[in-house]
Amino acid sequence: MAQAKTPSGAKPPFSQAGGPPLYSNGYKAAVLGLLLATYTFNFIDRTIIATIGQAIKVDLKLTDTQLGLLGGLYFALLYTLLGIPIARMAERWNRVTIISVSLVIWSGFTALCGSASSFAQLALYRFGVGVGEAGCSPPSHSLISDYYEPKKRASALSIYSFGIPLGTMFGAVAGGWLAQEFSWRVAFVIVGLPGILLAVLVKLVVKEPPRGHSEVKERPLEAEDVVIEPAKPPFSLVNEFKELGAVMAVLFGKWPVLHMMLGVTIASFGSYGSGAFVPPYFVRGFGLGLAQVGLIVGLIGGFSAGVGTLVGGFLTDWSGKRSAKWYALVPAIGLLICTPIYIAAYLQTDWKMLALILLVPGIFHYTYLAPTFGVVQNSVEPRRRATATALLFFFLNLIALGGGPWFTGWLIDHLAQFNFNHPGSTGIFHALGGAFTDPGAASFTAQCPGGLAPKGSPADLAALCKGAMARSTQQGIIVLLCFYAWAALHYALAAIGMVKHMRERAAAQA
Image (cartoon, rainbow, N blue to C red; front, side, top):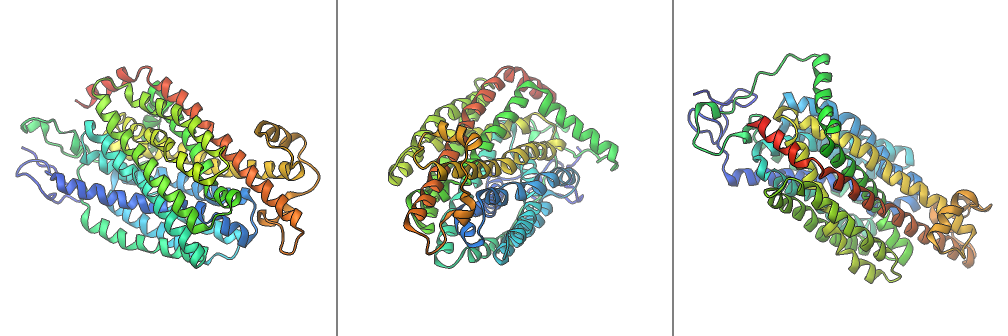
């Protein structure tokens, strides 16, 4: 019987004599835990700028458009562009090494953000954070898919995706407290440096499994069941483009997968766009301190988004045994339910009631992550999984992460100009129409640099600046929340043909 080898050619750990590596459940859980920790740091370093953004805005005298660029496009641009070549490397080389090196790079650049003295310098460091983080999810998704068989894959990916709410929570709580007690510069340094130690731990503990390892049939091993990595074809640009084309044909040529892609992109556009300005809204609208805001936003995100992410994975794996269409219907239903609850929350005039209501919608909202990742991973061959994740993240992050915060900041700036000149306007539709037809002559940016009236300004000007900023932020967030209902439509469309698609993929893997 042939024996499976790791990419380096050495016999893998926990190996059965004459057979493929046998990883214990405990070891697989440890690997998944370390990848979860890595993704948690990924999101801490990615999203902390939302929590401390108000302090940066005031200190560096930024507009919300600039703040949105720092939290979105300037991070996402190289993050998305480099994700594909790094994923292609992950299909051929050691994925654990790629993750570890990437973790060192993005953690170092996060710490460097604390030394920035201008918008341009901070933007440059955010580009660097994006370069490092490009090497996280594509190889991680590929590794998890080789450790966990198809029927457990969405659940495992939901645990990995739990790093999103965990990272958001820790980044918000720690970042808010550090920014208030010390400065936003100290916050960047403190949250960035520990990632370097985690990179060493990942490299020492996580082993590289053979590609396709989890596709072994669940019955006594026979010769034909042993997973042996096929020889890698010689590198050539022609072959690389063929591989990309083959994966894109699945992602964009298969109706269910295409609409899962559209659903996750549109939902994430609304999520990244609104989420970037939720902490500033608590400061602008209710006058709360950064530490208090970080605690509120962090605990809400950690609980509701965390529950939703895990429920999405385990619920769809459970319901998917009955019909594969539930991989699309669970996100569709969840997003449709959460939209009106979110809007109702942001219409509240008391921050305690706002925070209390926000505990609910995230449970439904974040059910879309794990099933989407699971469908994508199950739709391609083992040696194309990192590439599939990279292409998914390319469109998802370039459009959603790159465009969402920027679009929201741009919208808030235009709304602020209108609301500053028309303080009596309270309706969101009136403000949206007026912002682009009758914005007013007085310049909000000039009168309210950084969103606040200059020190020593008359009390009425200070109140006018504060009121326009708070109202405009609320209206901008509500507009972005409506994207969830749009995304729900695409997930519902993805259910059409999902059963047939997944049956064909299972037959191809047999």
